[in-house]
Length: 421
Image 1 (spheres, rainbow, N blue to C red):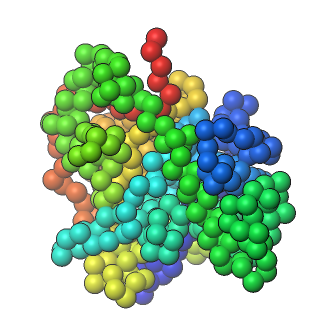
Image 2: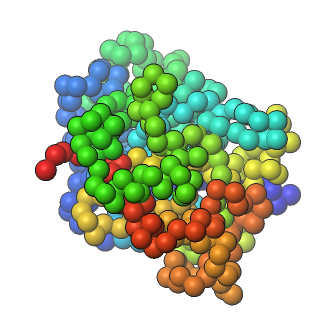
């Protein structure tokens, strides 16, 4: 019964606009402005330009004010662009004040190449899909990123629209309504075609998310692979550790594909890293959307699988597993002191602390009580989900502090926008 209820809460997985302290520069990265989506980018195709218009349109929420970019800001690597929120609960407030989701925003970049969610091992290992719990499977629209794009519009803790028809009406009445009809047909806004139009809205957003504007492959590491840049000695050491002793590349492949395609730094699999709860997440405060309050447990992929009759036999083996994210832009930020959060719940506030956790999770003792964040280095709080924890690839890596720092240095080479000094 508990598992079924947890599974019911799965779709409420992302918040929206943050209302914490934010600098003008961060606001520019978070929401480029009400008119920014109308700016034409010559390098984009018509459908990509349409998707960009949709992505930055703050009208597409109820009440108006929240766009996709509100939780996926370009300046922060297409994820949460409010440093104050990232430093604490990490989840973003939705269009309706006081409503929050339960996970931090994932990056919208490098998301469109994920396969449809599918079983890859008889024991129940899955690959593909989007959202941290895999519920945007890609089975509906053929692309998990497109399936994912439909979720926030109708989610009560995100954009809170009452229906697909209301979203379509706003799109068709917008300044890019003509472009929408040009791309998907002059009858796209007819009342009888609401379902098709709603699907096309999601496809356009996914097209933009798959464009070179979002997937730039312009990091220092890309330049290094192309022979146009050199890594520093520390960065090279970090790369060697990444592909060796630290075991990072086992889930975050770092080498070009068989046809020379650049690495995505994710294998699209799922894992339970043994993360503690983020006690600053407002989702743990009882509300009508989460009456369990602090008793709620984020069972990730397992909770979603429990809702599917065909996947239900694999639910138990996947409790606590979350999608392996891309590490591209993992350290991208609008300014050096900007706080980013790491882990599906944003428990970690720096790459250094996250790497230290990977290195020492099973070496340091379990803290006697849960702490509100990674403020201690002599113990770690217990995992939120204590089953299915990955003990083979992390937890006891034997890295020195200098090696941890080298890994962090290498991760810094994965940010797009690199230019030679």
